Amino acid sequence: MPDFGQILERVFSDQDILPADVPQLDLYMDQVLSLFDQHLSADKRNPSDKLLTKTMVNNYVKEGLITPVRGKKYTRQQIMQLLCVYHLKQNLRLSDVKALTGREDVDFEACYAHLLEDKARIRDSIPPMLDAFVPSDVDDPNGRLMLCLALSEIASYLRRLCESMIDGIEEQTGGK
Image (cartoon, rainbow, N blue to C red; front, side, top):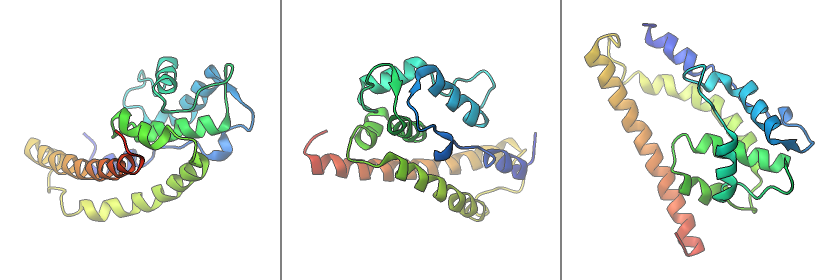
């Protein structure tokens, strides 16, 4: 098993779709799927995992997470919206993602570009925070479990913070 530093390095070596990578032209579904697969394959836990499928995208449209498609092509704005959904759905329920992305009053490209800027600062802040939690031997089953419990709890607090912010949106708009 790799040491914790190697694991952290691998996790932080994820890649992103940069706004410049998204064509100005509308894309067919297969082109959207190829864009995600080409640029985000490092996010896969297993090589056979699918990051995005036609069914997923169709369900996102049907459930109102992204704006309806006109014809068979996805606009740049819809692709940016889809990128935001992709990142949010890693930790939030789809109904919560919908509260954030199922709207037309958001500049998804600006929000996504800001996320990419934030990721560098987030990556820099995580290792010092982890120093307080990493046991001396993460190869030991107890040490590994203790660390995963602490990391899971951190993720839980952050998810609940997002949910509380989303609940505030729903209160402002008068519905759930």
